[in-house]
Image (cartoon, rainbow, N blue to C red; front, side):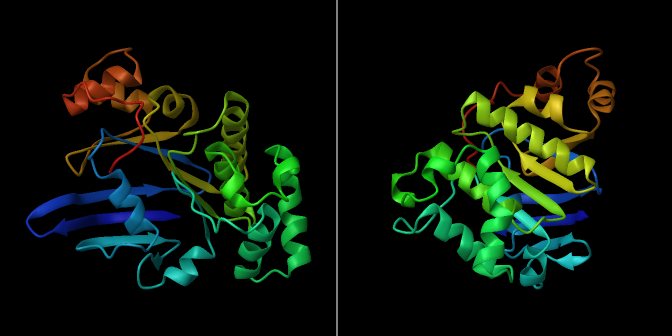
Length: 250
């Protein structure tokens, strides 16, 4: 469903991302890890068609993420790390707007949104202006928007930043359910225990490259940590004591 092949992004002489090759299969949860500045945000921006790659390709279901961006967006649900909304639109109005962008009328958009609104405990806030939403509420509203059109690929960028423990557990449940339904889930995170619990496969970015990827068992074997944790693998692969719980910066 998602395929990155030799993906690269250069800014002059600086290589932010170098030769990233990975794939995410239908029904798979894949986490992309890395210290700040490793290239995670740049990779997500190319995947979402915001940045043009300097080399290689990013494809969703065979569609080029940059040149065929409109078609790709019909297949992708995206939850950014810092959702941005028009401040003086209400939650329900934003959901109707997103639904209409996907071809649904206002009534169908809200009908599709209602189960997610209830599940994410947004009923009391749906008539509030977005400017009054906390970061966690914006994150939950953005997740409703991402799920509205039943995407084949869910892209989650630091999805639990700003969420309380209840909402975090709900998001984990939703991610698992999406995978069990045969959809693909690709996300970046600094929370190593989250990746270890949720994901079928994990990629570790370091210096703009994929330094290691595979199942947790495969990563343990290739990094030589024995029965160690994903944290042990991460530090062995990156050779770093980088902070792994701060918001992603690249």
